[in-house]
Structure formats: C-alpha cells, structure tokens
Image (cartoon, rainbow over all chains, first blue to last red; front, top):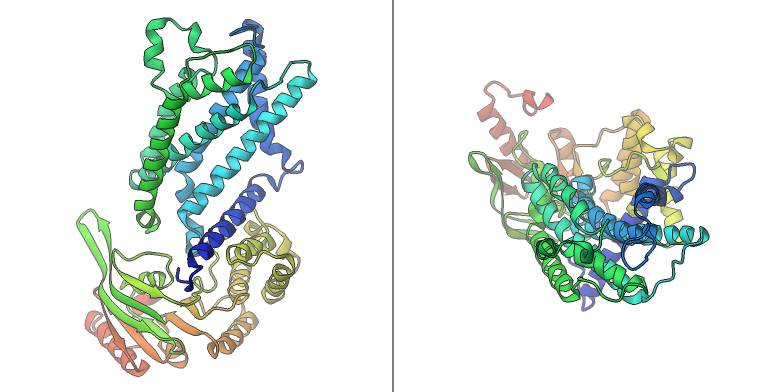
Length: 265
Length: 237
C-alpha cells in the first residue's frame, strides 16, 4: 500500500496492528461471544482436559519426579503442549479459514496468523493461571520456583508451533492432503513429548532418540524451573532455542514468499 | 492515479499456465470513470481484483497512490455468527476507525442506510440475501474512497433500496472515481467516461466509452454468431 511520506513504514505497522487487533476481537467474539456464559468457555475446555487427565492418571501414579504432585506435573506438561498443538493447527488453517476476509485489501495472511497466535497464547496462558489457582485452592503447593524462564520457554514453545504452523499453512494451500497428514504426525507427539513422564525416568537407550524432539526439551525445561524439587533436567535451552529460531525463520520466510500465491484464487 | 505496468496474471492448471492477462499497460486517472468490459471469464473480475490489491499480478506491478475501496457491496467477509453491527465494527477497525465516537458515527450511518431494523443486532446468518446485500452496500458507503470498485452489483435489494443505492452512487461519482466491471452496456455508458475491453488475455484501453462499447460488441459478435443483441445471451446464464 502506498501512503507516501517518510513515516510510511510506521504507518504500515500501525495499519497492521489495527488489523490484528480487529481480527483478535472478531475471533474472540465469534468463538465465545454467543455462549450464555461467554468468555469463561474459552478456558473451560482445556482446564477440563487437564483436570480429567489428572484424576485418571493421578490415581495410579501419585508422584513422578522428585516428589512433585502429579496433577501439577501433568499440567505443566500438557498446557504448554496443547498450546504448541493449537499453534500448529490454527496456523495451518489460517489462510483457508480467513479466505473471505482477504477481499478487504488491508487484511493480509500474516495478520490472521499473528492474530490467531496472540489469541492462543493468551488463552493458554490464562488456562495455566486458572488451573494453578484451582489447584492452590485444593491445597496443592503451586508456587513457581523461577517464573521468568518458565514464561520464556512457554513463549519459545509457542513460537516453535507458530513456525511449524506457518509452514503447514503454506503446504496446506498447495496440497490439500496436508490437513490430513499433520494431525497424524502430531498424534504420537502427544505421547513422546514428556507430558506423562520425565526423561530421567526413561531407559538411557531411548533418551537420545526422544531428545531429538524440541517439545520434549521445552517441557523438561518448564518443569525444571517451575518446581523447586527438580534442580536439573535433560532439557537443553540452546537446542530448544535453535530449533525454534530455525522453525520461525523458515516458517515465516516461506509464508512471506508464498503470501500472494496462498491468497490467489 | 492507479497505474498498471506490464501486469501479467496466470493461474497454474493441469495443462500448464492459463493466462488471464498478458502484459497489461493502463492508467486509471482520478476523475475518469472507467468501465471494464469483457465476456464471462475474460478476466474482468481478475483485473478488478488486481486493481484493488486483493489479488496480485504474476509479474509486473500496480501503482496505487490512492484510497481504493473493496468491491462495493462485498458481503463475503461477513462472519455469520456475528451481528451486522459487529461485522460493521470489524470493517471500521481494519480501516483505521477504532475510536469510539468516530466508529459510532459510521455504525449509525450503516444502520440507517441498511435500514433492516432490529435485524442489525441479530447474527448475519439469520439474514436474507437482500438484507446481507443492504448491509454490505451500506458498509461500502460508510467510507470515503478515491476509487470505488464496482463488480456488477448495482442491482441489490428491492426497488426502493436500489434507488437509494443509485442516488448515493450518483453523489459519490463527483468525488470519487468509479471502476465498473459490467455487462450492462447501457448502465456503463451512463456512468463511465472511458473503457477497457478484456479479451483473450489482452486488454485495449479506450479514451472514449463509446469506442470501448463498440470494440466490446465486436468481440461478442465474433464469438457468439448471431448475438447482435446487447451483450452475449450466454451472459444471462
């Protein structure tokens, strides 16, 4: 868009920000606005997911690593994992799902991608807080040992999902099979990313293979910094950082290169 | 001024590239209302979308130093589970109107112009197609543009709403520039000053609408033998 003047880049950024804000508000209203209970529903489903799993598995294995309560162990794994999963899935469908909106020239594919990412991070961040508040109310010790690294890893994991999601999105506009394949690939990830276990409990011969998976590193790191009882983990911040950087750079670059072709009808 | 410089557009198909437009050079000066003429599938809508920046050329470029509307009357961007008002708010926001008083003013304009009563606060999926069209048109008129892209939608709604629309467009015609893709030759002759005829991927630009209409008639006469009527009878399908 040509706006002229020396401040055209700033004006362009403001325009993007306005569109992203509008998309976030629209998406919130579309997804939760028409329920009687409204916005709490945004959190109900993931909170219930974690609560049910805690009850089912909590009965069997009361502690996991270093005397951490199992529901908390599970929550610190599954909520970040679900965020990652949602980032990939929502990223993948962002162009198809918003195609009609691209008739408004202002709305670019990247805006819809960012808007969805922001919404998912906010929702799953809130789910985390709500779940931990509930757990505290039930008498668990939910104190975060070292909050900043936890937050950082949470966001890194979101970015990893964003990068993979934008790659999947480009692939989905070129090969429709992508939308079938990606869930099949993600399914086993649910079981090997450390939602239900910590790496130190695994037989040594499997560790090296499973540690190729950056999501596993993220969950290890989150727990290491969340729980005072766990001082070390197999999570390597450098490995997570690099894989995330590559995923985001590759994803957004591909997204940028194909931005017109994805929208062309 | 909008300028098309060497604009080429093709789509990939199973049989290779399908060219819709080849190396188009054209200028669309402000104040000169332009008609885009061509048979169905000739590429009028593609050209309109390219001009509007909704689609992008395969090669070449389009200089657009002006505020260009989305296709006037667009309803495809509506989210069915949101109300007319909420959809209108979204369109305000993406157009940079996000401050409350300014937005309220636009929304009020849309509500009044669309004139669908309490339905304005009901989900769009409950609307009839006429009601959707009313809100779509009202939204397009809630903003002031330098160029208005009009894709064959002059006839929306019932008789009274149609009159309201053409009155409003007549008022805008003095301030903005229309780019009209249409088969309706009589209407195009009334509104437009110049014309572009799209046929077989190439375009011809005419400084006089009368010449453009003549050239368009020639293309339809060549193709559809015996269809010397207005336009091509197949266009009615």
